[in-house]
Image (tube, rainbow, N blue to C red; front, top):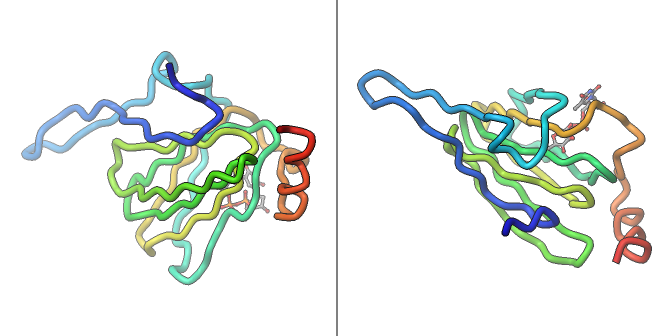
Length: 138
Ligand code: T46
């Protein structure tokens, strides 16, 4: 049984062969949520760290469709994990209430499959506020 309160790696089907190329597919029946939004970030300078926030409700799946992404996650339990995404058929599920930071190679394109529409009020952008939300959530 999958624990949707923790980040985990997902493997998407990889169809094809080296001589022709590949296709990977995210089907709603194989996803932890029905996607409401897909967006992508790219050309992030290598010395920039993105993220530095958590979400009250949003769940996400990140995929490095090209390049390499280093991701750190921290749960309200204090558990910290590190992940590297560098294969286009591999994704990282990020649950709600999870602080994250991301670093990118310059050629990295991060696709994000999101469970909800954009809502700035869903963000916690202050680490101290994230830590303080432990009291009410745990
Ligand atoms: C996340 C990580 C993994 C919009 O106006 N609409 C949107 O749908 C999004 C996603 C962002 N924005 C604006 C809000 C900010 O002014 O674009 C700016 C950058 O967004 P954010 O701070 O979310 O960027 P990242 O790269 O730190 O985070 C992104 C996701 O947005 C975020 O949800 O968890 O990737």
